[in-house]
Length: 283
Image (tube, rainbow, N blue to C red):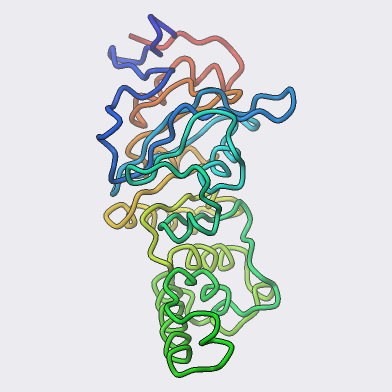
């Protein structure tokens, strides 16, 4: 229930429906989305949305279909230019930074599907994600100079290590189309992680996974907590509530709640958004 500009939660806790109350300098080590608005013609996809993710933190973004979750990810990665607001990474604005530039700043993303290149092996797909770690320039590569050869070997070793970490090194030489879907998902995650990002955006990573694979995914996301900031969009609530430190809820492009998983689960406004009925949260 909204009370005085807040979403009232169980036990008297609250999640603000507007911007986070944290100071602008408090999250200079991570991501801060500040008042982002996006309009497509007459449709408002995001309306003054704010959130933050610190290093070593897993933050979930949930909401019904059409809530604006994918648009938010596209703004952070630079594929959609917002009509208002800003994205701050490590204390600096990302305005004018292209998607490739943001990758170079340590921001990686997985896609809702797998997005693997069908004509490349699993190993080559993961190597494609390691461009941030490449040291040799284009000229060195074209001329086949020794530095380029060393670079290629290093990237190959890093890609194989990423596949091994996710338990799929045995498929390194296989094409994606020959692999079971859960294995393809692991290869896609390895591709995002091989560049050792400081921030990873996970876009519905559990889509198409069964119970055991989802359990394994949850353990791997928890393991990322100490190495990077994680922003997770996911429809499987058990996964979100099990791995996230905080959860942000969007509905029709607006942020309607934020809190711990327990707080969000008890939030009447969130229940109303998902169930379509008005529910008063217990106090």
